[in-house]
Length: 133
Image (cartoon, rainbow, N blue to C red; front, side, top):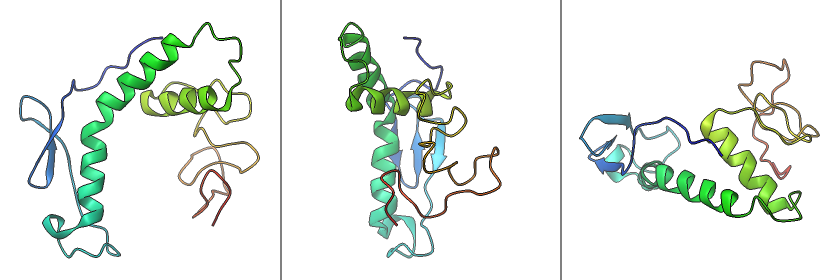
């Protein structure tokens, strides 16, 4: 499996900014209007988002290692492996290779294109991948 080119980890949080190991900025965290915190330092949602973003290089590498270790398994259609391949494709910008998902936005074809996908006039708004509201 090919590895993506991105700013190497570890990524850390410094005030309201996620930074690379050399201190260069990756992104700035902002509170959403419906977030209970008025500003980033008081925002539980922004803190959780920051932790997830900081962990993303490690998560991607670990998931790629798991997929590499499972490449000789008989059941490559196992839903866990399918979900892992979709997540890696989404993170790396690679086309989705799952026949039941769109290549462009990785959404299940039975749900339609995801919100913001340039290939659909009718985007899903507020629907999760399990089909809930």
